[in-house]
Length: 216
Length: 216
DNA sequence: TGTACATCAGTGAACGCGCGTTCACTGATGTAC
DNA sequence: TGTACATCAGTGAACGCGCGTTCACTGATGTAC
Image 1 (cartoon, chains in turn blue, orange, cyan, red):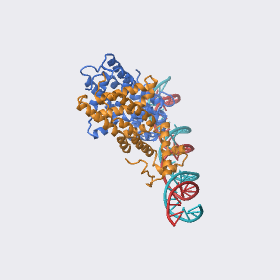
Image 2 (tube, rainbow over the protein chains, first blue to last red):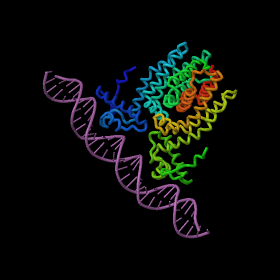
Image 3 (cartoon, rainbow over the protein chains, first blue to last red):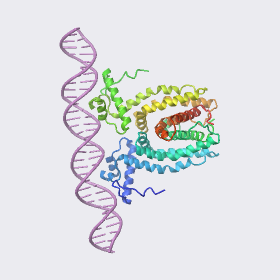
């Protein structure tokens, strides 16, 4: 696993030094902030440059356009989500399984709270068919999918889960739930469904669907 | 339930006649088509006008901007999804329950295939906090949510489902799965998970989580 | 059945703004000796 | 320890395009008698 800071390049291909790396980072952070404030449809190169007090020309030294910067932010998330994905590789079948799953679901909700704006844009552009974003999405999803599908196969082999479930589709459905549900949190809380209840519920659904433990 | 064609108005508030309604419709259809082709971030008023061979001024007679047209398309989906939502109000607990759920899930996948571009944009804008889109999303989701939450409560009352599940959160999680999963279909099929397997799996997850029937 | 008039619907052309993008340049940092 | 030079990093200002938007106008349709 190489340090991701290593091979950063400017748009002309040249490898960049420390000072330039800091500028690039500030541009990325500004892009993420504007994505959060204005949404995916309304972030301009000039806005980003203004936000960090730089010339628009500076932006073009590091990114070809706003989409390119969002792609770079998405790539970073692939790394940042790893610790959460690690939780999916643990054994959930023991007596502490439910607590474990709750903790993981809670962490992932936090992750969405922090990176929702970038995640939404990444998913949208991938859903719309952009190949570069599809690729990043695959890298982001793969560890979740592999780990969850393995759990399904395990539970099927030991007879706790019906073989009618497709392991990949099951993993995809549960990941889908985890990736859309955070967007409903505000609405839930306004209607009296607490964050804790959400976590408990998603954790139960995950635990039962992946280990075959009954919901009864 | 009033005929939705009734109170259509131009941007100046005037009620419009048949000829104008046709123009409005062609503009809406063109907007949906461009949304599908170019994605949510890149649909311009001029494009839409060009697409139907009209002057840009014509577009402004019916919509204040592209977002306004997308909102109108979203409102239409609230009506169009009703038949599918009706399936969620049926009794799933009988012996034909599983078949029923499969059929409904299949229909909803088709709905996504047809209206995915508009649905994605509606969800994105709502997720980003736009109040008008949040409102439409609520109207779109409410019948799904109400029906599914009722099923959870039923199953809890008859002891088939644990009371640890929050009915609203359960409904939300399953709806979330149904709304994100279609976006992964292409990836699934490339990897050998068929449409039928997806439907079967989602149907099983829905059926078990909402009726308390075991996945074992 | 025809004519005059009112209203509805649609348009071409123009304006101006803001954005994307580039270029020749300046300033900052690193390094050889 | 200082000086000369190379390279790295950042910039201001400008250009031009395309888009959003509007306005005065024309054409189409409906209706009264």
